[in-house]
Amino acid sequence: MKISLVLPTYKKEREVIDQLERLYGYLSRVNPDFELIFVIDGYVDNTKDILGKYIKENRLQKAQVIGYRENRGKGYAVRYGMKKATGDVIGFIDADTDIQIRSLASAIREIKKDSVMAVIPSKLHKDSNIEMTLGRKIFSYGLIAVNKLLLRLPKNITDVGCGLKLFKRELIKRVLPNLKVNRFAIDSEILSEIGKIGYEVSVIPFYLNKNRSDSTSANIKEASRMIKDILSISMKESRVFKSYFLKEYR
Ligand SMILES: Nc1nc2c(ncn2[C@@H]2O[C@H](COP(=O)(O)OP(=O)(O)OP(=O)(O)O)[C@@H](O)[C@H]2O)c(=O)[nH]1
Ligand SMILES: [Mg+2]
Image (cartoon, rainbow, N blue to C red):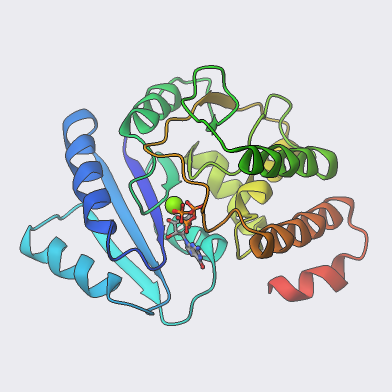
């Protein structure tokens, strides 16, 4: 079963090689039929050159680097990479090393089951190792509540924003043409599309290496952008004001 992993990559020159090395090593052992697609979301630092040089020097034929000049956001980068992905399983994972490999290991085990079309980790799963500060907890629960309130998500979803998700190719290729969100609400949009089709997803524990409270995506500015995007997805779902809201996402 070929696995394609897309890595939306923005200003990760300090961590991206570690992520490449550990994913390449791990997948070579457990599932040698794979591709890693790094999407450089804006040529704003040296990430692209560092990655390209490392891949060439070490002849990592299953890793590729693509991208574009302007920063457009995680959603745009994920969509860009997924269009190029050729695996039977297509997913995405953050380009830094915060997510433990055992999260990927259990996601792969799960998606290999015939009946499972999507694997979504959750910080709220009883076996997850996440200890959040109070502020972060309020933020996370609040965001999940907004998502559940406004979107028709698959019923068993308990978390939305974890930076690792795997899908069967047939499902994600069906959903891909409907995705419009450019920034962090891409996770919500994908789940809402899956919910509309009527699929349940497999929810697994999420293991992080560190519990940072200074996360880039968990701040007021990103949160308000995300809520605006979630509202737009909700409008798209209900087809109210469709033409007005979608203008921004073209
Ligand atoms: N912040 C940010 N991340 C982006 C963007 N485009 C793609 N990404 C990727 O989205 C993923 C998640 O972003 P991060 O900045 O790591 O967000 P986070 O994990 O909440 O925060 P950190 O704790 O700072 O790592 C990473 O793989 C980024 O490289 C962008 O425009 N801004
Ligand atoms: Mg991160």
